[in-house]
Length: 219
Length: 248
Image (cartoon, rainbow over all chains, first blue to last red; front, side):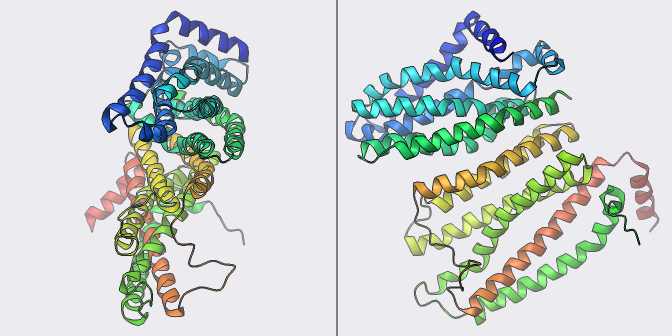
């Protein structure tokens, strides 16, 4: 069931590749806006880079949350999924994983290129990519709760950002903090351990909370 | 004697109980606030380090306490409403949110008024300020989610899940920003150590905290009554109530 839903969502995403690319280009554009607005001073950009890339990743992954359930909701698939005898939490976990594969992984792959634009050293690039790899699944998992709560509401897109962004803050702090710590010569293992802990906690709780939100939204 | 604990979980009987309790809590809040402000402004000595500016703590600290405490109470009622499907619990949770948001805003505002003369800045990105700001965002998210949903039952339940997710997150947010950066002075009052301030200062602060507490209860009851009327306007007991009011 878990793999079936991932396969299905990936197939749907592949049929509509423009959606995937829109998120990725949004990420690239937001990151590229910062040097234009604050000036191309390399020393400053190097300091800003982890924060800018992480904020852009947050926004990009949040923008695509609306798609996680809405099309299934509109064509009635979601209702059938709720009726199915399989565990809804497992199903939600599959959908969140597919969302991560479609939006999170491209961001992770793109991040080193953007880091080079900001003149990050090679070590920092590794840490940035690894922190995004560890952090973006958390964004998809927490975001799924927000997407399920705002399902079918008017103004759902703005509302989901209001609900989800405050909950993203710890991920942001430790994700960008890891890169800064490694640039400063301090160890980044503590940051990675905490990100890993967040990932495990959200893996356990988020699918369950999302499943009950979906049930409430579909009543 | 068997006490019927669930009598007041019915909106109609709670409505009349709340009506009787509101004047009590309002009067207590006003009296305590007058006493607290008197102690704060006239009895408590001037601080040798911070001068007169420290007197802001008489409203700042109680507001900050209430902001956090009210979120917990709100999440608790929301959880009860979600688990036992009781209408009144969810209404109370909805009624608490604006008061909590107000106290959060008040704590941030008075904090910045205090920060300007003490730290020389209206705002610093310090752990406590940041987590208080995030708490304000959580309150606003809760209120706007409930406002966006037209069906009150769905609004209650969706809000409850959001409040519970927020409760799980609050310690995480608190510790993440705490390790990230800190400038705010440590807690002035703790249960394990003897207080680090003069007894009159502490008395004034505690009296003000009690006043804020009473005020929150009164406001919550008033707002709950309004929500009850709004949601139960089609029922016969509200119609009877209206007739009684009209006859008076």
